[in-house]
Length: 165
Image 1 (cartoon, one colour):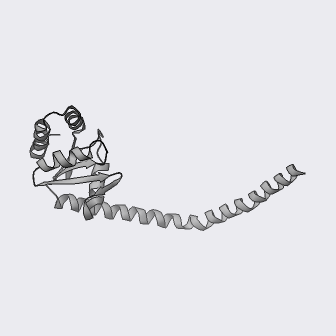
Image 2 (cartoon, rainbow, N blue to C red):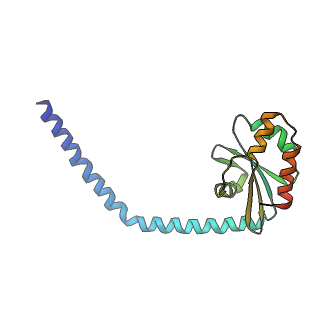
Image 3 (tube, helix red, strand yellow):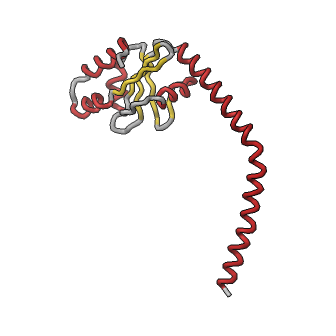
């Protein structure tokens, strides 16, 4: 008797769930083209704004470091004070980029880095192109080995001056 009752309740659940899912699909399907068009035009608008941002920030240099517990204090307290006044410091807290109104553009720049080697990253905008360099290995080598930061600062400054990628 219990098995029969279980089969009936399973079938009843299917009889309710399947029509609800089908009805939902029938109602949603006509909206899909509009959602795709909306998404397409939003992407186009963002790319336009991003290109405008790159033009506006031409020549700008960025030092981007993240919230990794082992290195955040070293980056913030040792490296950042030694950077030039023209260098924009960007803190990436998890997946959130802290850079005011332009955070979405900095986030896009970081997302589009092809050779991901790890934070910190150096970014420089030239001619509406973003040049990037990871100083991860040297950064951690200096931090862990308690070595002089001069070679790292020289590499950072050299990248910002020459943008040799």
